[in-house]
Length: 346
Image (cartoon, rainbow, N blue to C red):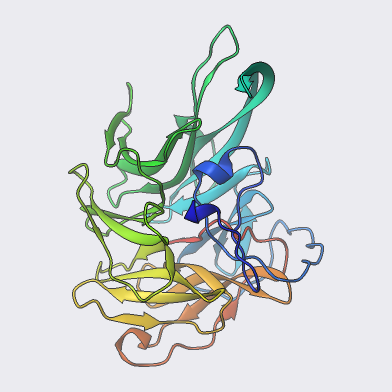
């Protein structure tokens, strides 16, 4: 499949390093073309440039939140990824890898196996107890053939009532689901796609649409789905190349995404009303963009000298013919996860 192609030169496809994630999480992100240095140990708190709001990102398998010029961890298991902050910055969603001893069939033979799956966790950004929102261990079986699912890319709607998530049973396709999680009782699930290969859901600010990466075409592209009508989606007409990881601007007028062309990854912004496309970076080593709540900044990942770090860039009118300001480096080579898109909230 397109999503499993190995990209050479400056950037390459990254896949999460555990069984089946490569087949289900659909991640496309660049890696350096030189060996990365051994990352320094992430500090509990560290100085960083002050920016508005809070930015969630992943260091060495744990979720961190940058606020008021410092960042601190919100998880400690080393198995977490894909953070999503609520608009008010108070609630965080993320995925965590889990596993269970079970059985599987390999080459027609039943074998003992450790079955992997993911869960979706919700947690206050000020700390406190976690809440298990979606459990990928769907059912245990006495014979060891447990039912396990992969959940990826959880995203909260603007009202905090629904979650868009990519759901995939073991060995199955990766489809877009909208899940309403009540205070009590079972979640209500609305499948928007069936038999698809999707990734990276992101809500529009008004909660009516969800943008995703699609791998059902010759090259990765971006679909915008109706959040309430299954099967209704529009593919964006973007510049030639492989487009992935879309995210809406706060006013809903733009989508920032990563465009891979000739082995180079750069941030682009697409105006939905006009189809106007703007290249925001040209260094070929920038990806995974997310707007700030006021729309004036973009957080993203960039590789320099074999190390991936979190950056932020003030747009300064770049969407209307101006030139963005120089990007600000927010981390210092501690081991930022190149796979997980950062998330920015108030």
